[in-house]
Image 1 (cartoon, protein in one colour):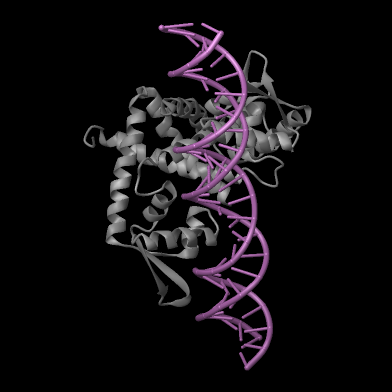
Image 2 (cartoon, rainbow over the protein chains, first blue to last red):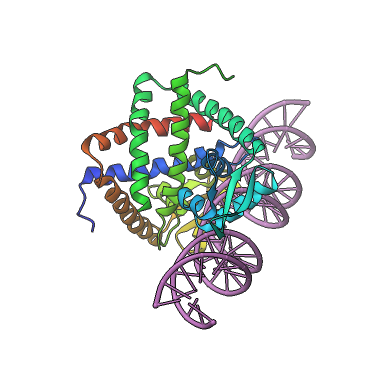
Length: 147
Length: 147
DNA sequence: CCCTAACTATTAGGCTACCTAAATATGAAC
DNA sequence: GTTCATATTTAGGTAGCCTAATAGTTAGGG
């Protein structure tokens, strides 16, 4: 399964892989003195419009259910989400964001977006355009990865 | 510090941040039944051409020195790198890859690049080009993040 | 010289965010 | 009304970071 791909594609793959690695570090650093960790912000953002069941949260985040439970319990202790049995299926648990959760998301999002925007400011117009054009592609790649 | 950026830049920042989050999961999944973890592969790839000191490795990976030491010790135990005092400066430690380390890097790189290449195959020519154009930009952003 | 300050790496201890396997409880189907 | 499937939690483990403290080495100034 190795000669199957063109050399240029393999090169791009390697470069993409390295970019992913760098991205992991950038994402982590985007969590300064923050009230919310990056993972918590992702979870909260997801349920900010409507509550979801634990399993759905895990699926959307691309993590296993116990990992989602763990995060949710932490957020519940912090008063940022509530957990209530799903009225339609008492096996399931509905997770909803609280007012203070919403406030935390907004402030964290603002601060982080400002941080990122500051980094993006150092780019040339062409670089910004190149980045903007590629982001949907990255999102597409991720979808196809999920299976 | 919030009205400082143009709305489009803020939007891009948000989109970029989400792409980073997706990237974190993709990167993690890129580590199947592998002999090497993603972090180990990055480290080994870095020293595959010439040995480096622990501090340089940490710097290049964007992690702190103790974290690099930890990884290096694991790799040494696995027989993939050697550690020797730097002849020019006995405070420092030269880390070099072993033959079996080189073999591990090659096989892991091949398998992972093939995995990524498979994902990239589903993209159109334009999408591939967009991605290729953006990767250097991402790398640049990361550098400016390092300070 | 030697003493102090600067540097390099390691050790110790801690944390986040994942994971798998097993337990619990509810729902569904025959 | 068992039995099988589904949803979540609990328990225990791991990777990969971090900071603070320690030990050894080098370099510079008096």
